[in-house]
Length: 330
Image (cartoon, rainbow, N blue to C red; front, side, top):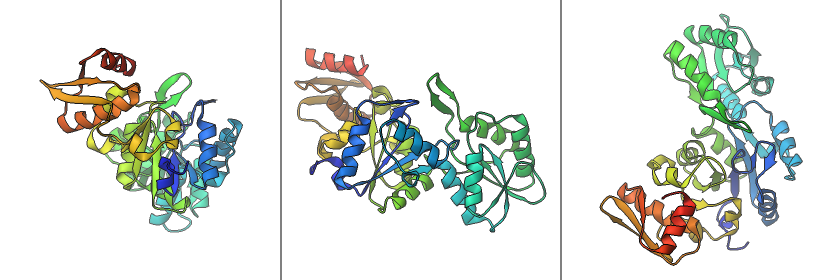
């Protein structure tokens, strides 16, 4: 692995759901790649926007999937939110918690006092995902925010991936309070920078690569933090969404899965590829070539699409047609 992508970075910051696992199922090959990263001596940090579980719970879940993990290797948006609060509030200040007890524990660890009801002494509201959040919880937060409390959201993900599909995430609950108060929270998790910067610092380096499956959180977060990013196609991102990505959501590297970390950086970089030719013609991307790897074609397609704004693809030969069909772009 001496020439692999990971050798260029001091730490690999891994998203979880859609990158390392799908709910209770590990993504094939992920455990082996993470083991190789560690053997190489590169720091691994698992970075999640999910504020409902503690680092110890996340580490236990990963360990159960064959990825031995210590809590110190896990960075959650709950922890990042608590750090934001600790930087802005006096020690011992009351913080109204909308979320799980794990979030309350993070607030407590930051030297603050978690409470569940609005009152004259509440200095801030912190909001993280909990499947049990209900109207009374939001009502208490609304009262505190209208009274001038600082508002910190662990993340603003509109949906949460589950084994039943995409369900309402913390961002949907944040939207309720945004509508009710007209206010905007400070955001700790991806795509804001604090969570990823804290994870890179915990990995002992400012030179880290972010690996994830969502353009609007993982890749946008890397951009906000000034870090390089590798997007994988094991979760939310699709070839079509990559072609249409806005500048803030464009990764430097692209791979089918975490196995890409074994390959050289130049092989994974978005840009022209020797076995594929992509030309913009009449508002379309015309593809020809002799390549056998559709993902390699996608790297070339993204480079031209981002330069020209064209996202419709047309095959110029049989080889290109097969590759575009496999990518779902026909």
